[in-house]
Image 1 (cartoon, one colour):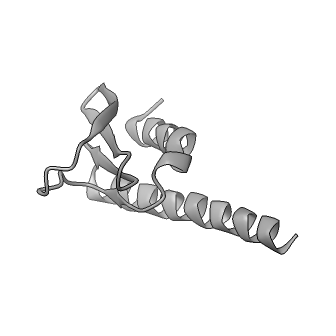
Image 2 (cartoon, rainbow, N blue to C red):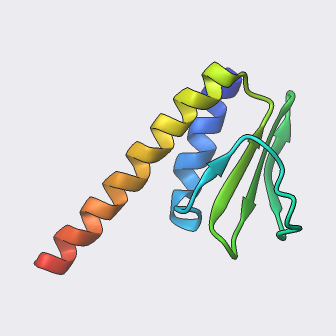
Length: 87
């Protein structure tokens, strides 16, 4: 499995914990981060408090594709919640 596919799987498996963003750089605010994955030059951290991911080690193109995938996942979760609310 390549780095992008691995990142997509980890993001999908943890999307319920971090629907507020995905970033390709470290935060400078000092937010508490937990590492979900660190191998093969790919690091994926999560901030549970603010609900976002940091993904390091992808090319700009790969990260752009991951961002699109992340947005699809988040939008689908929002549609599902709306559907439940509307009954």
